Length: 339
Image: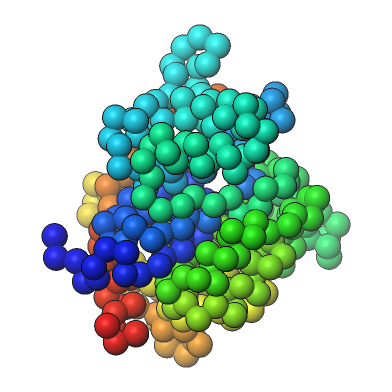
C-alpha cells in the first residue's frame, strides 16, 4: 500500500460512538499509530444496558468496538466480538463482559480499558469522553417534552423538530482530561458518522469538548452520515447534519465536511428502503456558502450484518466504504497542510 504519510507522522483524534468510529478506525490505523478514539459514554441499550443496570458499571459497548478496530491481534479481536447465542449470557458480547470484569477487579474503567488494550495489542488509544456515570436527556422546552435515556431516545419517532431540542447529560459530567489533551495535541480531528442525537451529540455537549475543538490547531473534519434516520433526521441535508454537530459543540469549528454523492444500484437501494433509510440530501447551494469546505466522494460500502442482542436496538446496517473515506481524508489533510 502506498501511504501518503510515514507511520507515526500524524496524530489523529476520532470522535464518535460505536459503529461509525469502528468503521473509520479500521482504515485510519493503516496510516498512523498515533490515533486516539474518543468515545461516547451514554449507551444504555442492548448488552451494555443490561451490564450497566445490573452491575453498576460504565458502558463498555462502544469502547469495545473501538478497541477491536485498533487491535493488531485478529484472534483476540474475534474473541472480543464473539456474542453468546444461548444460556445466561445470551446476547452479550465477550468483550463487554471482560471489560465489565476488569472494571470490577481494578475499580477503574480507565484501568480496564488500558488492560484490554494490552490484551488486544491496540495501536493507539481508546479514551472515554467522560468517566462519570451519565444518562442522556433530550428536551423541547417550548412544548414541555422530555425524553430520558439513550435507548429510549434512539427508538423514538420525534414528534417535534430535533433541531429545537436541548441535548444534555445527567448528572452534568466532567470531560475526561485525556480526551481534551488528545484534541489539543492532534494534527487532525475527525468527527465520525453516527446518530446525531444518541452518538455524536452526547459527546460534543460535554463541557470542555466544544472549547477544545474551537481552540485546537488541528484540522477539523466531519464525515456526514450516508443516510437519514427514519423519524429523527428525515429530510435532513448534509448541511443540516453539520449544523447540528456545531450546535452541540457550541461553535463553528469545522474546517471540512465530506459527504457521499454515490447513488446505490437497485438492489442496494431496495435494502436501504427496507431499513427506511434514504440518502442524505446534498444541498450544494448552502454548502457552497458555508464557512467550511464541503468535499464529495463515493462512499457506499457493503451492508453490515445484524446480530441478536439482549435487548432490541436500532442499529443501521448501512456502512461507509472506510478505505475510500479515509483516503479522501488524508488527501484533504495533505493538501490543506501542504504535505
